[in-house]
Length: 353
Image (tube, rainbow, N blue to C red; front, side, top):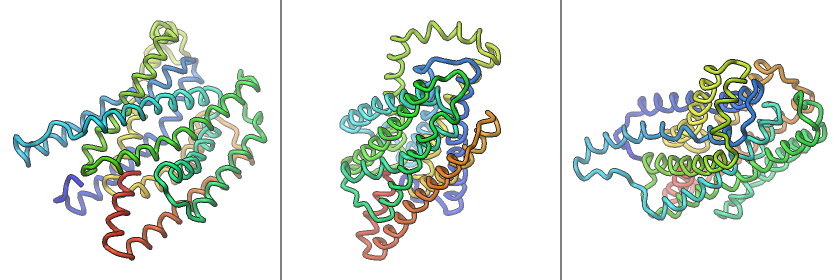
């Protein structure tokens, strides 16, 4: 950690603030994206761009951390900690993140928030499988149980695929959106273990500054990828026309655009803060806890139908989350009790997920 002198109370305050920021990102991001589509927005590449377009906001905590290093280390403080090798790896994963943003935005343009959120819950299953092959993570019975439950939940939603189809969306478009969202979950399930692999192969201390730098480069690369898509699709030229036709008005169109980018960045900064102040296990628990909140907000604000199938899928998703993280908790506790060396290994693992 970069702040060894940080008091317990200050760390708890930072953890609370990080959890609040993460909650804004998890709950607000999907809702703002759906608001854009519901009120007349139709540019999928633009919506993809907004998911990481707020990356310059990451410069604020990086500047604060650099000021802190200058204060404690003097002129010896490095302006940045990232090596060229980590930069290249982060950039490549960032491009993959841009593709993932596009898949999620495509799905989000055709699906209700309540459905797309439940489908993205299957990301945990894909992450477990991806981690098994990429970082050789051993799957416990709890992890396998979570994979099965989340898969069943996704299949259950697919059985009644037309039951909550938004107005103006054809059956074919709905099915494509359904598959795109699942692909987005699958791709992100590969991206997360790849990030963990970067941490494992970094050959340097994983500090909060380095984690933020990696996140910033990934977001920058994803934004650059989506910018190319926007140029090819002529989204920049279409924005002024779309703003004039936006149901909420031209001024509110740009307000929605700016707020969406800022809220999505809250997700990334918040999750980094939770991992830094606590662990990746805590960040996973926060996501699991906030999933039902996103569902309820979607029903309230967009009057979405919450059918019995969605309720059962939500139950299976939460059951899968609890099973997975209970298994992680037991494994961590077991290894911590084994030896101090094992404890050091677990700490490194949880900081890198």
